[in-house]
Every structure is written in structure tokens, then in C-alpha cells.
Image (cartoon, rainbow, N blue to C red; front, side):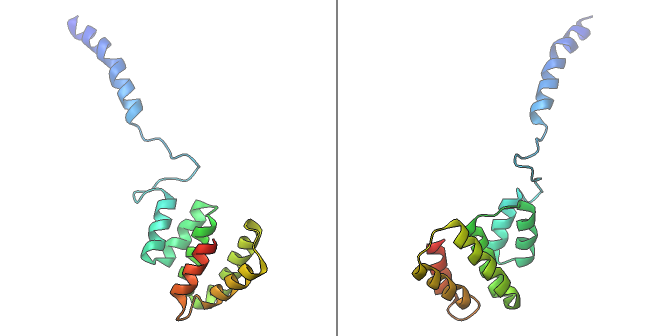
Length: 132
């Protein structure tokens, strides 16, 4: 009889603990992988220059920020220069839509985007980061 009473006392505690410890899906709809949230994986891929993972996780994340899109555009300029033009134009269109740039800023952005795949990459990326 005492055994049943202890079971009755501890059963709700075990059930509550099991509910707390079960993993909940992340908010925002994206699934967490063993490497972490897709946005974290995306940022890590950008940091380490992994274009394949960055592109795949960017699609998984959905809407990336203007700054993140710039970093992806810069990575594409470095790793896949033949694709750079399309991505640079896309980034420029988004920049124009989200910001209210002056004509001088637009000229600087266009010149910097053109310079991304070349030897002036560091200065161009720095200028773009400042504007984004």
C-alpha cells in the first residue's frame, strides 16, 4: 500500500519534469539542427567563407537583413565572380528600396559593388558596410 502512495505522489512530479525537458521547436518556424538555428548557421558560413552553406541556409532563413545580403553578395563576388553581377544588382535594388540614398551615395554603392570581385575588395566592402 505504501508503494502505491509513493507512486501517486511522485507521478505528477515526473510528468511535469518530462514536459519541461522536452525540446520545443524554435519560434519563427525554422527548425533547429544539431549545428544550431539556421540564422546562426548562415552567419557562421559567411564568417568562414562557405558559400554553399551560406546560400542554402539563406533560403532556409527566409528574409535576411540588408547587411547579411551584402555579406552574401561579397562572398559570391569572391567565390563565384561570374554570378556576382546578378546578386550585386539584386542587392542594389534592395538598398534603393530600403534606404533613401542621395545620388552620390548611389554612385558610391555602384562603384563599390563593381569593385567587390577585384583587388579593391576590402575598401569596397568597407564602404558598402558603412552605407548599409
